[in-house]
Image (cartoon, rainbow, N blue to C red; front, side, top):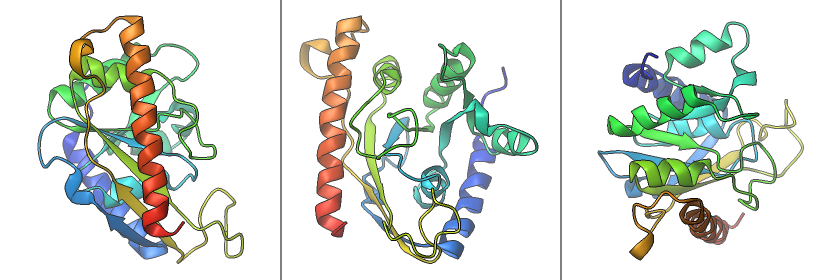
Length: 216
């Protein structure tokens, strides 16, 4: 398997910047909280189809996202792979995607994950265990990210996107480790379950703080 392209992810970041600042009005808060080097996982709430491109265009470093395989159709497939994104089969353990994601972290890159697994309310109410696995296996810190867009229906060309030229807030939280104390480094099922609970608590708290900070 060819490792995800860091150069491609950098190109994707440039495309994201142009797209986001051209069509919407992003306000980025706390980007300095993302470590400037070394492996890191961005855990992002997922309420809009815009969330992935938004992060690619507003994060201070190039991001490799795990994206559902259904998005890799037609010419979009080679494009997403070309900009360093990772295809994942959500219906079964995907060893290729797992290896690719761990390779990103092992090389000191940034891995983007929607821990809820699919677009929904974007409230971190239901987390899958994948985020905990990658964090525990790699030892990479997690940075919670809240993407908060307008709930206004007018001006929407597509229901799953915020209205064009509307404000969208991207709020980065403090980095934290998935495990602490005696659990550090353990990969047992209980350790992963405990890490998932800890992660969910931190992500939910960050989302609540982000809403208070932005007034959304």
